Length: 259
Image (cartoon, rainbow, N blue to C red; front, side, top):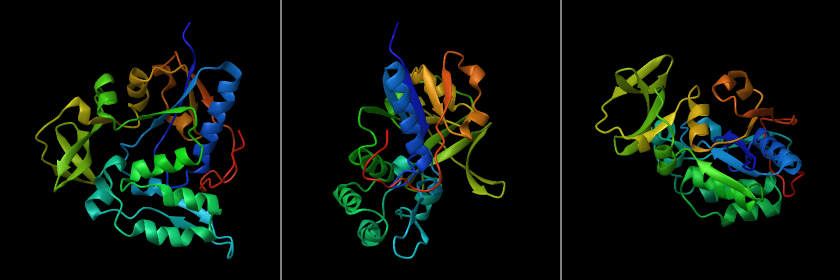
C-alpha cells in the first residue's frame, strides 16, 4: 500500500501568508504525525487576482492595521497576468523594507531583505520557505508546464497567452478567450496558439485536474473551499477541514511556529 499523500492548496497570499494558510500547513503536519506520509502544497500561482497577495499587519505603535501588497510593472500585469508572471516594480522592496520594523520582528525583516527575485510568486514562496513554513513540504505549482502536461484535459479553463507584450490569464468562454473587466464585462482577445502547457483549471475543475497530476489520499480544505468542492469527483480522497484559527484573514508573521 502506498504512503499517504496529504495535500492542501492555496494561491501565493502575500509576503507573510494569511493565517488560514498557516492553519492548513499546521493541520497537514498534525495529520502527518498521525498517519505518516508526505505533505504537498499545491501552489496555485496561476491565479491572477492582485488582491490575493495583500498582507494585513498591525502596527506595533499605533495599533492600526496596515496593508502591504506588491507593486507590479504595469496595469496589464496587475489586472490580468498570472501571479507567476507578475514582475515586482523597481523600488518596491526598499519602500516596503522601511515599513516592516513597525510591523514585524527583526528576524522577519532580515528574511525579507534576503529574498532576491523580482517575481511575485517566487518572492512569496521564498519568504515562506525561509521562514520555516515549508520545511519537509513538497511545493507543486499550477503554473509548471510539466505539471500541466501531466494533468487531464478540462473543458472549463484559463489560458496563459500573450497580450500587448505581457502574458495574461484569459478565460475560455465557449468560442472566445476573454479578460474579465468587472461588472459583468469581458474583453475578447485574439489567441494564436493553444497548448496544454498554457492551460490551468477554473475553480470548478481544479480538484480533478490537481488530482490527476498529484494523486493525494487526503486533502486539507478551507472553510469556504469545502463548501464548493465537488467531493464526489474524487471519492478516493479523504477531505479534512482545516483547523480553526483566529483572525484567519490577517497575515501570519511569526518567527516560531506552533505545530
